[in-house]
Image (cartoon, rainbow, N blue to C red):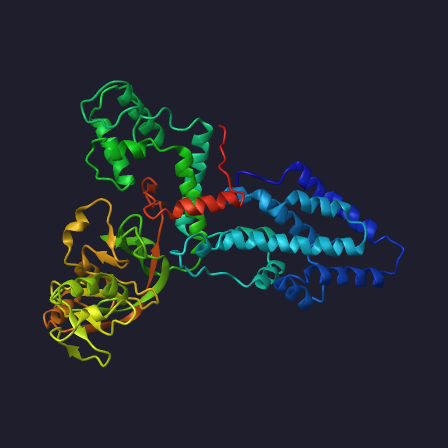
Length: 538
């Protein structure tokens, strides 16, 4: 840990409150009257908070913080220390107002005063515990595309479990225990130290540089790559092989084509500030808290900013493929959520979503009834109907009575296989006949679903857990050209995430562009809540 409780807090915890408590309980009023006054005060102070009221009611309004015994003292110490160390996790200590708590404790003179102190300590504890475990922000309040169900815990369970646990151990167990969170913490510290040392030096004063170039711009490039950790110290002022290789490593870590030439996109990323990268890390930590739950021994991880889909087994990437995600416009942006893959559909029929049918295809058919001829029309009874006698001009987005479907084929919009985790957002993973898009660096083109570059290999990997020869099994169904569902014997969790900063078990931290602007909105919300950047000296 970078911080320990300050001397003033430690001294107060050991002496100040104990003295107040002794003074209060030395009052001449009968002990029973003091206890009654304390409990009444607790009940009144907790009344406006359902969780606090329920906890204290079940506890007969007995305190857990303001007693004179060692357990209560340890809880007070653990809480105030956790507040002071909250900035390690990118949380603002001011949000928990330790100074106000200490003032309340110091000024307590009566049992009723102590009752108010008791409840305020619990209220602060609940806020800090939830923030550490599942984040400060409510995702959907920040961006409507973040439809993730955060695994919030019952507030009363926090208090109940806290009273049964080691106070410091309880706080240590709250943040995510994932390897990703631990690595993000490490990167946060590294960047804070770099910020304290003055950052990465002067920006590269050039629009582009290539191997063989020389001069001051190359020196700036060399120095920034060195301070970022991609290049060993060098005195070269020429864009030599070592700098070229360092540029390649940098490009790979930032989702760029690793060609070793510092073009405009590469120079832009190299010139990003330490502050920008540190903000991305702190946003990623908040996002990791939103996902603080078991991911699944085997799971699928789709990172929208990285345009990739991975299969993770025992925290190791066992398969990875490029992906195309939703276009950055209107309602096409892919949402963020978690669900479970239940089955594969081989030789799928594309049931055109109504929004696409009426916004895109109906206008085409109104101009030309034969347009989009690869799509078949079906009435409400599921019967295919001919276009010949249909006046498409008589319909609009509200009253269009037909469904549009594309039969199975290699030209089907879904390709030859889709991976289903049924959800209300109508999002799934699938093949596509539009293979050329996978060669692009930024791959945000779909209506929201996730297209895979290597869907067959992805299918083999998914089926390998239940089929001895998954490739032969898959193609035996594919060759029938009939729409077929293959149920998974064990559901596979799917997590669609959005991380502009993420880590690897080995190698440099990865950074990506904020393709939908979501992380910028999260950082703005964190700042409004009091989060700020820190710099370490030395």
